Length: 225
Length: 369
Image 1 (cartoon, rainbow over the protein chains, first blue to last red):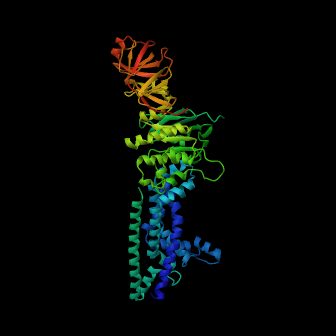
Image 2: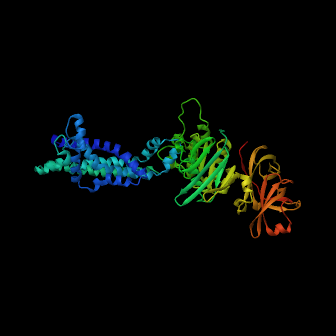
Image 3: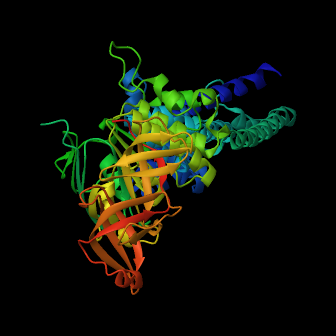
């Protein structure tokens, strides 16, 4: 693969890895709260988290652009280190990816926590486990298939996003040009061979991800009584 | 505050459509059975005591330790020194048997050894061959034994058991009952045992609390409760009384064991233990018949002088007679179920002396005092 093709691939993997780590850290407590809370307004929060499933990426991209820009909270944060905006930066892409992929990570983790039920946590409490020990020693290991599914989906979804990264990243080579936007650029400039190289790679990647998901599900379905 | 003031639990409230108003007093040691039909709220009471259900109008004190006082004080479950055995074993599927057992056990470091020792529990519950197995590879009875051991190793000062045998088939039940008996006999841990099965009560309980429609309708020592004609137990089809006694003699040539109880002695076939050992005797009301005078020669082993203390009519033509063993009627109480015709023909009445002929006596082990 030529260096021109390698750069967006590396950037995509880096972005997806960082975004997935952030997603797991953000989505796990959120999913736990959604699965356990009895607050009547929790479904409203769940709906907000799920908005990216329905909204066109351009809508999310537009509002993220405003939020990350010089006059939004993203700009205020950027001023901490002397910059004026988070838009068109790698950090901005991470924020955008996390927002965009959040529902796909929260949902399987929430389902896994719900499937555990109350009983194992009650058992843990009768065995003197504090709520935090019950979470880390019982709930988290029992929900691990859901976490793994969430991580794979989050990673794959970040790799596959286009509209949002184009709007808030601007496809700047070496900084924000990921595989999906690069393919678009190659097509625009008539470099069909290069576009095909990256596109075919994405097809293989998608196939491997789906196969991996099926394997994870099968493995855990066998492993549990 | 004395450490030996037993269990004082009161909970009132409702769960969905089910309203309850429980007041339970249980002694500081021994097994207290919470017995009642399904849906009567036994499990709710147990969960309230454990702090798994929280009702505002609740009070719970266990051997001097206050766990709940209305809405002012509520100790969360994980800070209560209790062990809880659920109806389904609920082992952690991601942990081995050994790790399940160790989950609630206090860390090994620190000078003092725990009161309930690992090796003792492993031996008591027969867990040695299971330690390295995964929960999914165990049978139902084995799982419940692990759950029991796990609860014990958390060093509880109160053991709560919610129908631990009801999810098991008869063979597994028969397999685990002896473990529960050994447990009762070896550990001085107070326990509340929820069940709707009278045989479990007769084998395991020292005390009995009768529960019906969200209330504790009566509570007391097992034998006393069983022979109280005012309670529904005495009128039930399989009414029986559980007595405790000591083996007084073993006749090796005939293979008979004599067990002495207050006011009399029973003979049962078989060499059933060493002289002096304590045994529980279960005597069915339907196995006891009455004669006004000492009967002639008979194949019935047990004929005991007794006195009629009270009666209760259980149907148009049947009644249950409460008997006090001994010529003066001051010994243990048993029940006899007789027809109205026999009662009238024999000219019996309260206070008269009779001879009770007991057809069958079932023995099981009991705590060595």
